[in-house]
Length: 193
Image (tube, rainbow, N blue to C red; front, side, top):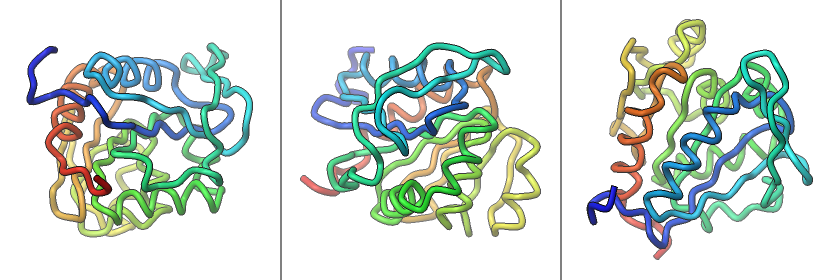
């Protein structure tokens, strides 16, 4: 780190997770990457209080929610990270306000990074049609049916839309996922400044 080209100083990055079920390392590791790049990570969820993350199927740690997504102003965020975990995006896509928040951010050209099962939320937010992305392999058919092109790569950056969409498959891809999204977030013009 420390290169001026990948600084996130002055940028606020939303992390959106359900109250239960986010894969812990897919929250904590990208969160640390944003903080180390000088950005301000903020935890959004569908309910106030704390979220419980999972370590695979075991309960993990809890994390304090900064803002309830229904009260969040999409214009206050420069980018969005969507951690995975099976139960997490499945809950988010049933929440109208969470889906609307994701849709607004992607449609406004802000960069969005999603890993593992998080692409389910992107499908619900109609953010994948005509885009190329990767995901946990079990989501391939869902993404194809939603009008996306699916690739099996450790990270894929798609610029065929309002803003960059950065996707990865699994926790094994986290190092390259983080390097890639930090660079994309740093190079995307501030839409609201």
